[in-house]
Amino acid sequence: MKSVELFAGAGGLALGLSLAGFRHEAVVEYNDEACRTIEANKRAKVVAAADWPLHCCDVRNFSYAKLSKPIDLLAGGVPCQPFSIAGKHLGHEDGRNMFPEMVRAVRELRPKAVLVENVRGLKRRSFMKYWN
Image 1: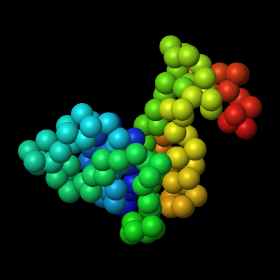
Image 2: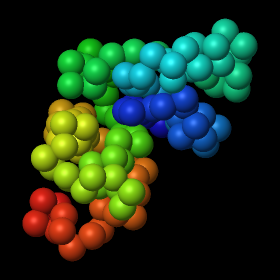
Image 3: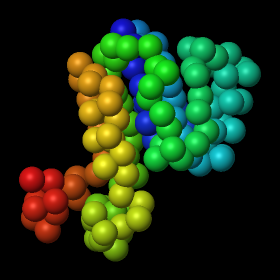
Image 4: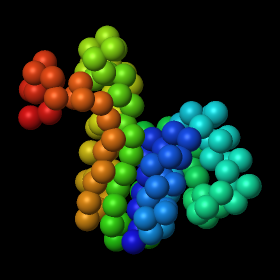
């Protein structure tokens, strides 16, 4: 099964998916420290991380055109700050809102399944109009 992981962080979800049998076509992360952690795990041959095609870049500039399709699973931990109960509650008006990028990935990759890890604040009434 082939997957693409966006907003990978230090790779926890990607690792779990690898252990579950998914082969990542791309693992995309913006944060330099998180990328260094994944790279260190790759060098240490931590489980399947050694085979991950890591892309340390802004997902807004990532092209899905060269990925081998079909993709079985698109997964990611989209940044939660715009929707978190502890945050400023700016939702779609927050520059860190990357849900439009997850939607772009769905449209371009047409995966069989999508897994998005985020916060329960997403379900708040104040954001319903945005999600609808």
